[in-house]
Length: 338
Image (cartoon, rainbow, N blue to C red):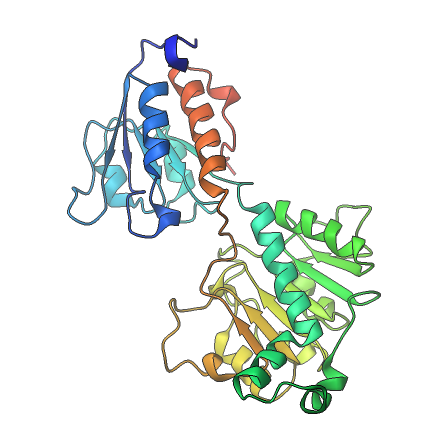
């Protein structure tokens, strides 16, 4: 029930412990959102935990909101009923164990779709049009048509080129629509070969080596799990076209990074756009930092100045449902029984 000043009227009280009080703005709840929560939920107390100079948790907590939860934290919260991840992935915990403990899990699935698609397209278009080479020439004080001419054969159009989307979830489906609008041919790798009107060819993960062989752009959106860890092996990179671009905005650990570096050095592929890495942040000794045919970003593909508005809407609606015991109406419930 909505009361005066848009407060949620509920007899149920809740103690929410939250680790979203770090220095990076993506992991720090804005003051305006904290005020919004205080007004909307007078029966709810939100306290910071698992952050510098704060306790690891609170044994009275019923809700955990954040990204840094561990088994140790869960074991120290006997009253915990609900975990809301501020991320899409929930691989920090064993979801089957949460089912045994009767703990509800929700994620922030869907909040970064537009950002991820924009990042994928940014990598594709910059690599295709040689923008990274223009910036190198600019830094050398030699940016002109004559100096750029040596890259002539490496400049692509997107129209009629082949894009392989590895991981066909919400981001992959949105990306397929954008790529199809750019008149690209779309192939996908997903758990099953479900028909989709935008997709020309379907593959499963076991067919990765075959799938990459005809692709001009390989976009990795895979999550990290036992099936996907280092699935991009040297053998897979060997199957790629020498003119292909590899783009990773999924998880760094899904790639054998040494094999990728070898493929780039040996010109087995034309270039790469990388937002994630096997070790983050990249060390200053990483060969990737000095490669002219590589575009890098520091794990920011999902960033957007609209993120916190979307996170606020999601958490507030789910918290309202939780307080009203309307669990079935909560968004992004994670299946813990698979």
